[in-house]
Length: 126
Image 1: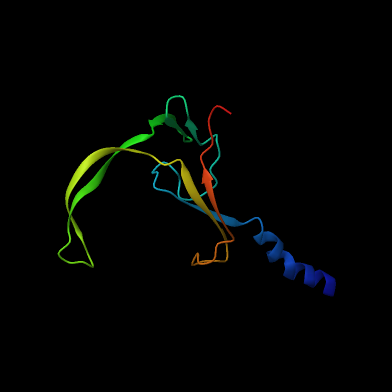
Image 2: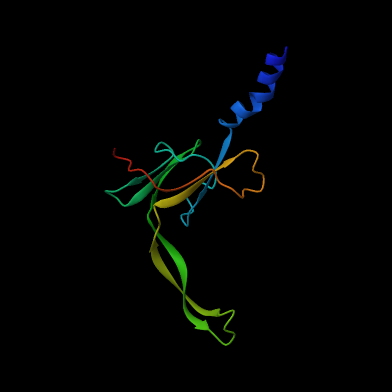
């Protein structure tokens, strides 16, 4: 009976290894914030310099260049908080790298990641 109870008490320990939460951080808006990124869902086409994004409903090609507002003039009267006074729209290359954080399910506040990895999106042609 004691052996059975000790196995039941260890069951959550074995279950927690398979229940990890993955978060992704990137400046690229097409990289999902949560979950594993695989080539079937998101990949880079080197020939056309574009991203292939596959959703359950549809798939699309997105150019790696995006319009972004870039500040070209700052008001630095308050040195602790400079304020942007003039912006310009420029073509910016989307980033194909992201940082992947893996957390244990029990880390509710997401303070201590189990692993932190810098990764790059895979090439579609492989």
